[in-house]
Picture (cartoon, rainbow, N blue to C red):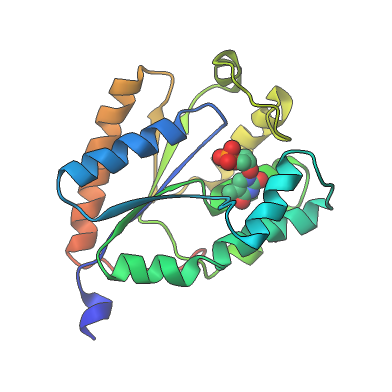
Length: 212
Ligand code: 2DT
């Protein structure tokens, strides 16, 4: 089957603590790839535009209360509802730069005290990223950048635990970048890694699922 083995877009995820620079770098990567003529879109999770996303948004804004397990499953459902669109975009050759994904799901919920393996389970079968760019920054340094917006998880103590959970998720598809460096230096490193990944996927690297 030509579609299965053929050229496709890359699934590239940015992860990191709040204020690590994920959103700025996503924008920059989007313009960079567009400039090179690659079909590319920038996505983010939670996707607050869906019905599920609105429930998540209300929870994060402290406008609603939910059991920790229930909100975890909503975050996961929010990715499942986008899975088929994600797959068709990738197969049609569009690269996706995704700001947060399943790793945020596991890192934040397990930092709150939920069992690590339980947190991973609902993510199994979602598409596995080709590359996870981890913007690494000490929690204290991220906090100094200011602009924690007052959403539920934007507190130093929780962010420290999230950093430890991220470490447990690290695998071969991850690349860590020192996000305390100036924004242009980080961008330069990311460009190289992303271009490399896009090329590999164009050559027909197979899509796979988390966590298999
Ligand atoms: P933003 O500030 O990036 O919109 O994130 N989160 C995110 C989870 O707890 N689980 C998830 O699955 C995802 C994707 C991290 C909003 C907050 O939601 C947290 C920060």
